[in-house]
Length: 137
Image (cartoon, rainbow, N blue to C red; front, side):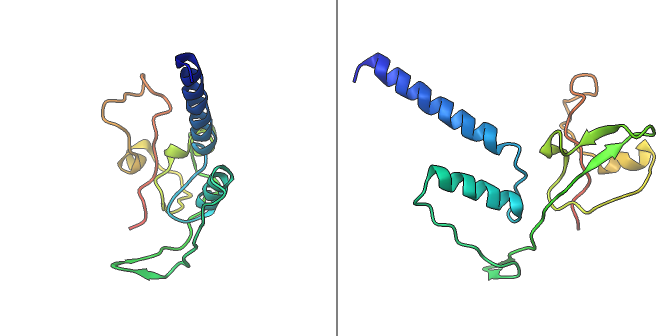
């Protein structure tokens, strides 16, 4: 195999892996739920010999118990005009896994303790910086 053939093969492998990452990034995955099932089905298409074992919620595993499935349909924060300023459908990083639903109006001061962002990100530099509610206790 020539160097250019090796380069072409490596480039194609890289493109394939990038496509997998691009396909899988939007899928909301936790350790349970529909997103995990969707991801495993996708990976099984790539690796047909892969064997998936399901473990029911509530199963004891060493010092841990398999949690209930966590599936999300929607999550967003609206401003006073009803505009969604943070939306899970836009970016699944806008929500902390296993968050509990909240449906109430609050001031920014009341909301602020429940928001998370990287400290170096400012509102001007990243208007879509991930923000989410605290996970369930």
